[in-house]
Length: 130
Image (tube, rainbow, N blue to C red; front, side, top):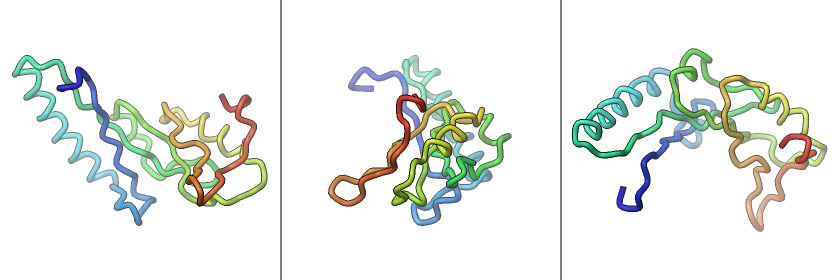
């Protein structure tokens, strides 16, 4: 708020990413209730600030998410992200296109999966994907 922002999104990892402590549908719903209380507090205080309900949805190599579509429909923003099979050298365009056809996803997060000086990231036809 001090920076003049009006929104923030909480994007915990989804349940398929156990190593990152991914949350499941029940935890996501509880988080949503807490966010609702925070937003009500801001509104009652006259503050122009809103916490968006969102998640970083774990995508499998076929571009499918690991959460129930009904749970995702209650969110403001869903980031679709690949977290596995990130060292493949063949073209990965098809899996990105599959993910982008998922009606629950609004943003494709860290698309290349690159880690500087560690992992080159995935190769795909980026103009086609964009």
